[in-house]
Length: 144
Image (cartoon, rainbow, N blue to C red; front, side):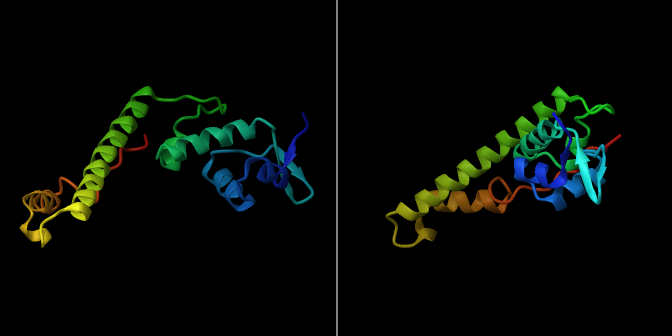
């Protein structure tokens, strides 16, 4: 298959040309040359872009995704990193599930005031202690 220019890659991948240029600047993809002013890419870039999209959908940062490729461009996925992300997603799911359940209870609560409801008061205490609500920022792992 012939090399693809940036417009073809954008059209086939659904990723804007500006994003492709940004990915190239970050070292996630690389062009193989130019046709006039347009960057050219090996057709394998589409698979690499799919892997990047999968990583983004899973919540990995671009820096984390960059670590998932060996210098030659082959995937080199750290299984420990995948496990850590899965655990992070589990925590997020638990937090969001608790928030959903609390909202459903508050919507259906028979008490005249939510402040009179023991369940709502427990939810309020949990929010005050950080057990539910916005996740706290955890420090990022160093890149090297």
